[in-house]
Image (cartoon, rainbow, N blue to C red; front, side, top):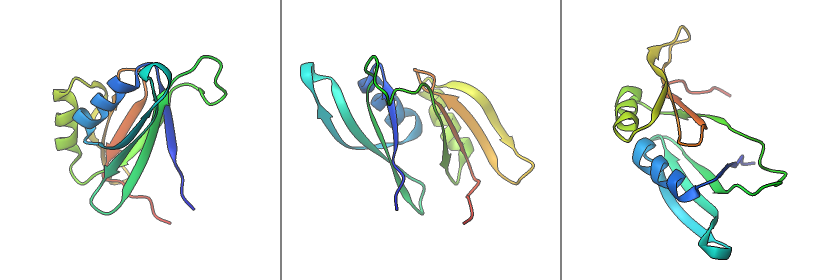
Length: 126
């Protein structure tokens, strides 16, 4: 089984630019619809151990899947370096890097449309 996360954006092109520049996502593919609007794009996040795919597309008024903003967690080995990269790319800092009481070092930034990307060393166990 796989879980695929999809985010909707008013400006999907700007979101792709932000996610690749600020957080190091890798663009896999893009499908444009009417008027050249990005209907669907896939981006990969590689943490060294695993790869996750994030899908995104244009927000459409009345779309039953447009549920609002999201919070996503990215696992990384060096959150301070990723935080510095995100800040250099203009990310809005939600939480500066901090050592959590459960052993993870984490930070959080918001993308230009308000989705929050938290990143840190915490690795979920199954």
